[in-house]
Amino acid sequence: MRMPVFRRTNRWLLLLSSLLLSSILLSACGEQSPSIIDARGFVAQQEGFVFWVILVIAAVVFVGVEGMLVYSIFRFRERPDSVNPRQNHGSLALEILWTAIPTFFLLVILVFTIRGLFQVAPDAQPADSKTVNVTAIGHQWWWEFHYQQYNITTADTLVIPAGTVVHVDLFSNNVIHSFWVPQLTGKTDLVPGHDNKKWFKADDDTVGKTFVGICAEFCGAQHGNMRFEVKVESADGFQSWLTAQSQHAATPASGSLAEEGQKIFQGAGACAGCHGIVGVNAQQFIDTAKVCDDSNPKDLNNNECPLGPNLTHFGSRGLIAGGVLDNNSSQCNTDQSASDLLANCNLAKWLHDPQGVKPGNDMAIGQLTNDQIKALVAYLESLK
Ligand code: HEC
Ligand SMILES: [Cu+2]
Image (tube, rainbow, N blue to C red):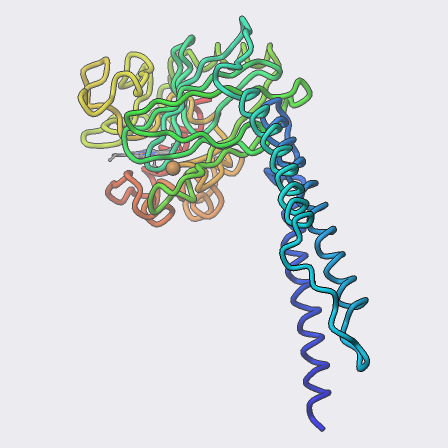
């Protein structure tokens, strides 16, 4: 007597869990989702096209095969008076047919895949006099970007002009990382000792948009916190960004809290040993991919090659330490109490406990006091 009750609850469980599963899957369709289906640049669009070709063919095969299966199950199921069906073992016509049909489908996929490969290959990079050449350097675990024509080095945020070819040289001197901006370009690995390159382009109508960038190759404990963002500007916006970024860091007003922060930054054994700020402890930006490989531990200024991101214009960046936190500058007003600052301002959280926020990262420092954190927040957020 108890069986039907069980069956009914099982059915409800099945329904509930499939609803749950589909809502999890659908929740990936939000506006912010970095989906390859929402491609916003030529390279990702070509790659997305290959995806659709394969999906449509796979759907046709699935519906065809399952349809015939279900039809046969019902139409030819055994009945009390059934006789043995006609046997077709060894039928040459059938053997040829079910070899030819998959071969045809695979050939179609092959043609579109090869076409796609040629369209996005490094050799297919369109000639564009405005091409922006960037070196993307994979660290454990953050991204450094060096703009080759402008000698600017930044981290976490890759700013590009819309509708313009961006050429990327990929460099790692540690483990393999992978550069992926789902809506703009597919994955390309950064392989130590083997410098890959790629190119991509953001559509003209993406001005003002920010795209999610990801490290897509497992590279250690904080691989999941090795993100970056790609910010698309208009041609003019990009030019003014370049002009601002190529300046030396802003000098804080004398007697200000920010000035105290700068002193702490430069203090003995402190931040300046791992971070460069141009105009403070560095004379110029460094192309660490060129200068700081394993055979050369000294930078252009004959200092140890920097271990951490260049902070010259940190205040203008959207992310902290590979996107483990957002750089929420508007919450970092230093008029608030120390405990409010620590609760609201992500930069303060980072400086208070970088190992707690991102365990195992290379920023190993002694505990800063709340006053030091306040001064450093005032200083670093002022570096727009
Ligand atoms: C031993 C080297 C080292 C020292 C000393 C050090 N840092 Fe760092 N810092 C790093 C590294 C490495 C990262 C990147 C960590 C990651 O994302 O994995 C980092 C990240 C940061 C970031 C985030 C930058 C960005 O663009 O994401 C800030 C801000 C920062 N450090 C400030 C400071 C300040 C202020 C001090 C001095 C109190 C300091 N650091 C001392 C190595 C260091
Ligand atoms: Cu990585």
